[in-house]
Length: 98
Image 1 (spheres, one colour):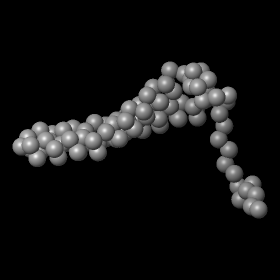
Image 2 (spheres, rainbow, N blue to C red):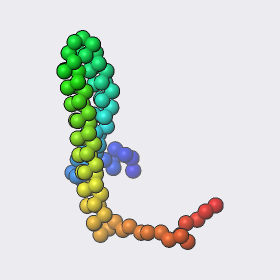
Image 3 (cartoon, one colour):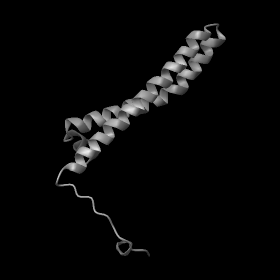
Image 4 (cartoon, helix red, strand yellow):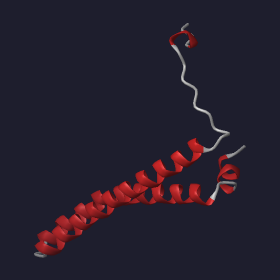
């Protein structure tokens, strides 16, 4: 099964988790660009604007990461609580070393 067909068959909550993760990655990747633009703004004399831009980008990225983590944990708990998913703990004798 390809990744695309697996994503097409995903439930609504799985799509929300994927969207939240993608948003978090994009916002974290945008922080260095916001820092660079903020420094340029400060060099041009807009100190408050540059600091506000950088601070807002950090806050937005942090909020997106927290949101993605919370939705991911919630989705994982829902998956584990379903009866068809079992968690098996392995003992020391169950590992095979070569």
